Amino acid sequence: VGTNDPVIKSIATVEGADVGKFEQLTLDKTPVSTSVTDEPGTPGNEGDLVKVTITADQTSVAENVKPTFTVHVNQPLAHDLVVTLSNNAQVTIKAGETSAPYTHDAQGDDVYNDAGQISLGITSAVDVDGRTFENLQLGGNASVQVTDTTDEVVAKLTATPSVTEGGEITYTITLTNKDGLPINNHSALTFTL
Image (cartoon, rainbow, N blue to C red; front, side):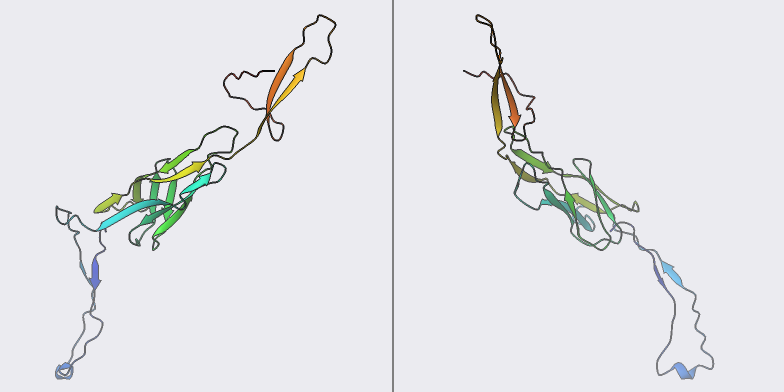
């Protein structure tokens, strides 16, 4: 994959029936080196395939749960592989391994109907040492469905505690969650008394 290391060899030993026929056999142990040129990658021979994919570890999660994904490479590599996801997070697949986990932030638990989907893709994958791959392929997106959790909203009515005859009574409706905290960021609501 990418640039290949040179092949370096030297004479280590000699054996055979005729070894003793020489008066003095000296082994020149000077190493020789041969560079290995990678094939350029042409149609029909695109070079060694490095395929990076992402999968979701579950099909759905509740909105307050962090979904997990796994980033895969189709073969163990000699160096770490740094994968950038579509949300700009980076995952490193260590040298010699074929996968690495990633945990996405939870969508967030709230009182609104907001089920949805979290989808992640791969934007790039690079060798940590900057070596170039002959045939790098990035897989498609992985998705997790986010299911809505049911959170109670309490509408509480309060009124002016006392007025003089003919006075005006002010009624107020306050929306709170189960813990009594106010609910904001909603459109106008009309309550009938």
